[in-house]
Length: 608
Image 1 (cartoon, rainbow, N blue to C red):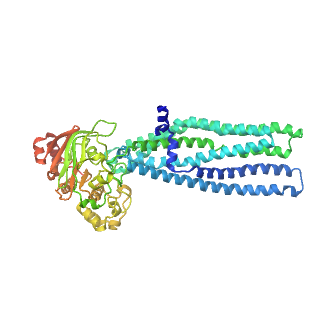
Image 2: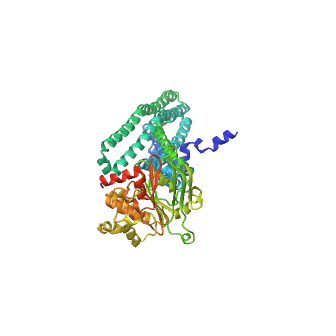
Image 3: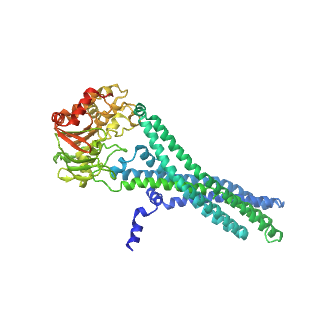
């Protein structure tokens, strides 16, 4: 009994497509309205075919003109009605679908913002864009391209079969059977053939989107690194996978389409074979025979859309699975994820405005004891970290690339769950705190945080919505961007390209740093502030950050060694652990790896 109950209540046991459709907020009444209008539109088409057949057959008998008046009027009415009802059906169904897409996309954004940040951080930006973009659209298309055609086909098929059966029973039965073949057997064959193909195609489309966006975002660095050819090859391979998936289902789709045509022909033949002798025997009127023979030609219009509806069903199911996989991975809400966080796949800059409580509560410290950091499902990246960050204290975390520095920062910011050890904000476990409490205390920005395609001022207001122009200028001056701001054509109102493509890498990094400085939080965590800057500029920025501040504690993650003399303490991470710690001068004398890194900077200075 308990097992059965678990199956019924476990969300994973429910249909992914049903779960996704529920998130769209589409109501059954909205779908029913679309189906009703679609049925009226195709019903007018069927009635037009039947009445036209009767009118032509009756006119061939040369009756008085008055006998044809009603039928002629019906032909005009059904012809006009088909267009009017089709327009209304498209209006209602597309409004329903677009509204559902908007609701689903909003739900996805809200759940990701409130859920575990690691779920977003693990996904490549292009893949994330595909899931909140194209995949959401595919779920919305389910209404227009699958549910409505299916509902119309069922309603119209039953109605037409009943009417034809009333006129001539054998033709009505044959029509019902043939409609069942065309409307159920053919789509089932299509669905079986495209199920695996769509799963492959969906994964390949996501891969292609991720690669393409990566090439667009990092075109310059990728060219310098000589990776453009490799990425182009990967992009072509993904496109080839999509083509192969489509080709794999083409034969079955063609057979399904042909089966529908054969069913339509069979319905007409049965009506003729059974109807002609009935007319000869006087059982069936000649005009009625024309109706039962020609009506199926219009009735099968409803089933022609069903193979494509089956394909859309598979596409929507695959898209729903990808969306729900992302949402389910974020379902374990991380209390440490700051509310109001405005982040893309890797943007961890928090939105923390001023709060009256800041004046009444002492600024807490951030303490880690025996901290183990790492991504879920992977080996720990860093182990045994002990540190304390308090207002007025500056820390630096340095180490070679891949040492786990960024993973440590994300864990300290609450964006990754603690694997082991203890992490406290003040006297409280960081994981147990409310988001608002963390927002007031900690702000973190990663090296690839997102820059939006809007003005300089609005990009800075991502950190705090009430930032004034004077505050924005001051923050930009603090990070050395005053000359850059003065050179902009419209100053703070200058529009930046998508993800700051119109500015240099160094300007982008300092813009993100200025955004972080505008947050009213006593503890600041910064990842690689000197990235993409020349050595002198990078050292100046890092030194300025590490200069003791009475109102803020600062932790800087960097691979630069030279400017770390300004830090109160440096943690040198090597081989997944804190290999050495202390003041810069002490580490130069006692930590071989640290000293070697410092010497390399002097011998081979970095270039922008």
